[in-house]
Image (cartoon, rainbow, N blue to C red):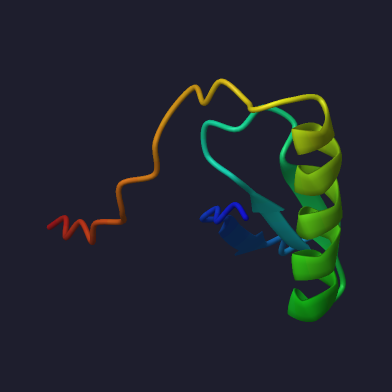
Length: 69
């Protein structure tokens, strides 16, 4: 079993949710809802793992709030 952290954003132009796993090449997807996005990402990640264990290019650490001004 693998656990990944996905970054999820909402595109203001299309209204679609867009998600990706930082450092995991090819692990990204989009959907109209969060449940559908989760399913899409699980399918993509499962397909990528079929090719073997990925070489992660980065590791998700967290987020920071930056105050300017």
